[in-house]
Length: 146
Length: 138
Image 1: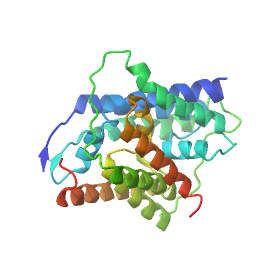
Image 2: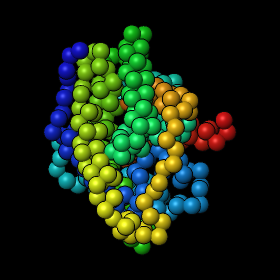
Image 3: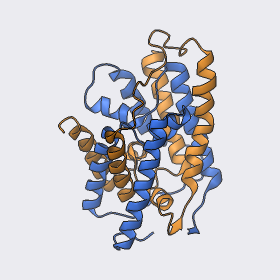
């Protein structure tokens, strides 16, 4: 192990801001900010709660545009993997996996752990472990350099 | 107006601003976090940790003292009944983790990165959407 690119201040600040959004949505409207579930309900045209979920997704899309009007330290954008095969397979896996497992980083990781749900703690442990194994395997195979 | 439009819109905006500030919309940082056996970028621990420091007292202390959400007393706080550690949770999370590691995007950041107008982000986003809808079939 060799620690690189560590951005503690920026990442902690971003995390606190995410926590604020999660708290606001829960205290004001009573909903968990699990993004995979919110987005899935929108694209599967679930009539119940369609409007508020759509507006949350619109907010997610425009947030970065609003932020771009202000000065902040950008942590950049770089995709280490650009092979279309991995991008498509990765997208399918993220989409299907989050629905089968009922949650993603926001739903299990932030909301679930935040309310001390054992189910979400297990889910988060599993997807991080699976991610570590996958990245290690991809590096071993020479498919990505990190 | 507040309940269905303004509150979710503002929360979505704040959420994605947090994602960008934290570096979550940079796939290289996410893959760097999962690269624990190589050149490791521990930043993501602070993202999740920072979010939980705020969300935990909200769920476990503040909300418990309230009669219901401020603008949604009628529906009340969401209740999640499923507490099972079952096959779906473990298999689904394993598959999600694999996809997350292959590209470096989970659903929130993939949506928040759409306005970068990047072909690879679009490709991932479309594949992710199809993957979600596949769950309706099998």
